[in-house]
Image (cartoon, rainbow, N blue to C red):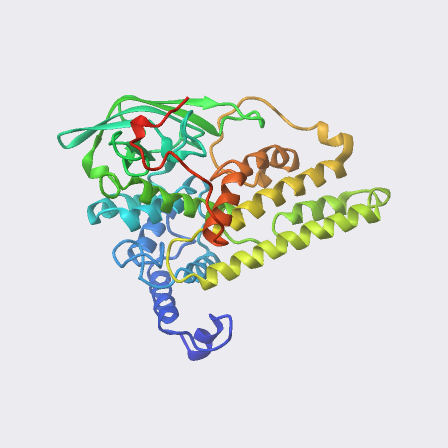
Length: 413
């Protein structure tokens, strides 16, 4: 690669720094040995992992090169231009599980899970919320009791996206009920095919059952599948949650074109009769497009400024804004459609085979229904506002009387 070619890989047009050059050299070496257009996708992603181009900000040997995280976008762009297939939507949860394992997992755990997670040979789901522990996640009651080199797990999780397809679940349990609720939690990788694991569908407003509830009855989990130290599940789960909000706030992952999801409304606008394109509606369309574009640019800037692999509480802003925008956007689309919005949608019960947090892949009517969940999944909008107020703006926290006492002494419904 010439100096001119290398310079073109940077947004400023100047020669790349050492980290960018390291990534570019790794990409060139990978493409020289593996043509993504002619190589099986699993095999190519495996080679990509081995080259340190899975998550470039991870440590060498764990799918990374130890460089800054914004260079992941350079990898994605170059490989897509070379013919690599887009990431399978069913592997969405590697955006959550991968950073959690890389940050908190032992070397053995990283070797066991990161590569097959990235290749898509093993898919994941999230097992956090419970019937009595949603927004108050630290109040969870699913128990894990030590039995030699194993843990016996009993409990119930709910709102588990794509759990019916997953091979493993990110499971957070209560291992010490006598400790304060944030201290007695432990994080595991749960084999979703293990005896005692039962997955039941939860039908949604869309007609499908993307969500599930998961029951665990005397499920044995090997201690070697523990992620982080015993009693440190809260710290590990925060890494998962921050990355989840980052993924949702960025639009579900992947490249986002100018205007983001507002382009759906623009395309609908173009198909309308001239009499339906009122000045008031046009003004509202432009407001939504500008808001979507501001969100896209803000997320790009946040990614470029990131110095570490895991996002901070500021991504709660993106998640909150994204949830609010999506609802307003598809409300607007339904208003443009008028009575036609009431027809042309199939509510037949079905079990989806992929994940689309925006809903755009299945049409406007589906998106209008699906984005209702955006203000709930990954932390409710009310919780996001608390995080922004307390951790971003530095406002006084809400009074809490349940943080210090032992979990088993805290009143619950």
